Length: 93
Picture (tube, rainbow, N blue to C red):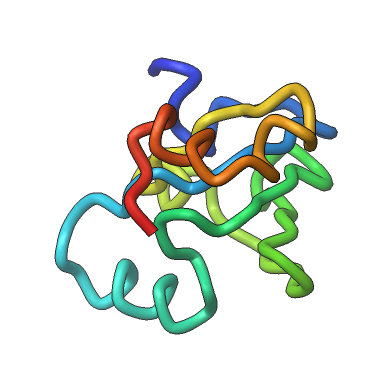
């Protein structure tokens, strides 16, 4: 599994959601909770379940559910504050 999936992140990693794969009930529910492309995400605790922070909300996810979430780790918050940085990650907000 590549590091561009949320399930592969380590505790403390931060970045941006790039995609939600599939059209299942789960992916719809994740989007209702704010897990949408362009949202800022932080891995609070890796494991199963994992605890992630999406903007101001914290959500527990099973590892297999986190495999449906594409995300790109960003190493510097000032990179993300520039509008074009999201486009460089393949995110269209």
